[in-house]
Length: 295
Image (cartoon, rainbow, N blue to C red; front, side, top):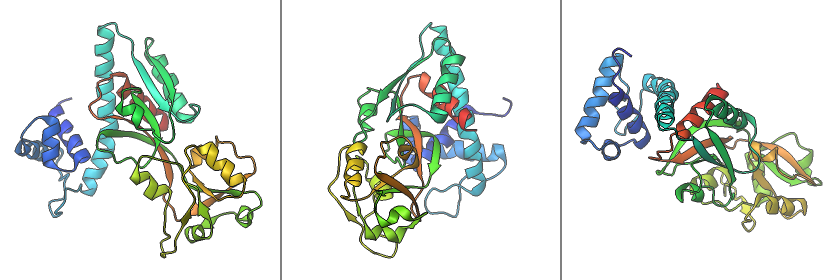
């Protein structure tokens, strides 16, 4: 650990999350000029600029981006080791209430097993999330972390490991002309009416429920539904189409529905998120296990 100052690393990580020295100083409880001093000291320590001095807005250099990508999981793992040791020293049980839509599977299931096997007193309790309000249980303290569809840009939530990157797919009735296609272009979206699932995030709606194509053609929407199952039933009945992320598409009831990949839309992906400032020591341990499962 020679030559490493943890405070400099913490400051750099917080600054890259907040993208504003003033906001970073508030989170760290130090003056803004101290934030700048710590980052400059870190740049001198690694021997290269991390922030782009020519940019009017706070922006990382390419070297800074690479450094951040390598630093974040390493720091999370270090913090998880310290938190887990502190918890064991107090003879406490590491318990994480994990919000999830549907059954836990894939890398998340692998991470949960590794978490519980590595920590004999660790337990993960899975809590089913309502698709229309995935963030509410996090903010109300009903779950400690959750697997949700991205993007997530809420300032009070931290985004950890990202996984299950897949093209979005359009669910159409089995007898629709699109059902015979191998893929669709984003401009084809103007030829159907979308059935969106109610979501609390405007960021999510802009990415996964567009209202206009890149060429300016209107994408019509049907009334919003509250659940995925309700929307798929409407699709099967020929009352519209529905955009699904790949992960949801593999686990929903798709009777009478055909899924066609859409080219030109942002990829769908899932991420592990938790409240900023949360002190449950099991959350960073689980996040580190998920990052390792994805490696």
